Length: 319
Length: 195
Image 1 (cartoon, one colour):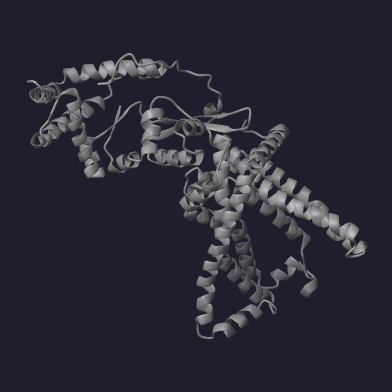
Image 2 (image 1 turned 180 degrees about the horizontal axis):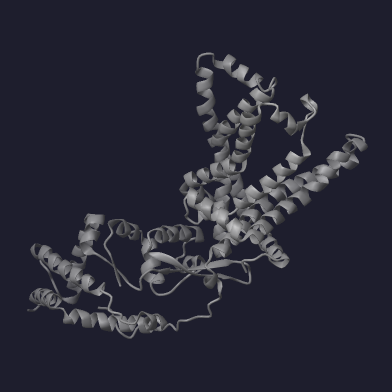
């Protein structure tokens, strides 16, 4: 039950999509509610960061100079700016992860009891806010942190010219070295796969550090099941997005604005977008939660117990 | 039987739904969130939050996990003891006036059985009752089982009956308990109507 087979992965997908579809109204309302709360929170975070910048000596001019640095970045200043963006992004990504984590709470209710409610998402949002925010920062650092460290170490050891190897060409025509791009994809898949059990573990009551350890160890111990489930959702998303990418690449071949191409494209894009956000994202959280619950149970606990107890009335009264 | 003396745990169990989950259901049998949700009439999310709190403090544990035909992964939760009792003095410390009020109302309620305790005697009645309950808790929390393995194989109803017989026997054997009980009974007798 804990190991992956084609049938298990197919069942994971089918069951999670079925439950997501069954609870689609709850998820739609919850996603709207929770993401509105998230945008408000991000606006507050932004106000805390940018208002002092505008009010500081130099004010808007200093901020403009900082912003203009993006246009003139060379490898050295680019690196500094990239590090700055990386650190500045943390308070902005955390609220998104809290919102996503709260959806995992709803999914936990579905996986354990077949039902959930819209207000459930806000309870998880409120009760697990700091753990989920911490979890989000952990995911962000776990995936992007090593990449930043490798770049910084590379620059420290070999100098700025090491970054020239990462890109082919120059200026606006610069594209990433295919070898590095491939390594990047592998690292992203591996690191994000190892983090898939983090939110289900936080929802299960573990601290951020404990949940991270659990997620990584499950990813290693049950590599086939964890990565099988994760990749099947990624592939499903890619399969849905593929027609749009294909048409976007082929677009120059069509007369731009041709209605016979644009209308089906827009209709498909809209339908797919709605399906991705309101069905596939919840299904992903249901699927991963389900895998977590199966994997986190002790092996002997997963054996179906027929039952041990004959119940009946008590003959001897209380004291 | 486990006597709960930790004030934090007592406070946690003062919440009616949590108390119901533990004392009415999980001490008797293992149940899923769905089943608890059905019997308590609360939504699964609320039950899950309560279960997590109870799990954190060790009052409840996961007994087993079952996957169903529909794809649900059911976790069966169970109380960590077959029976819980709360320490009276710790309960009074944790909840303040609530415990005192409850004890007073218990004593006043004895009037329906013909035992009228005058207001100036209520304090004495409370002291006697508290001492008796404390001793009872102390004795009942001792492990009387000599064969744990065989005990685990008993059905829950047989286990409950056998446990009550042996706890009653252990109480009768204790001199201090017998002394406290005679004082309490003498107090009740002296306030019985028509005596």
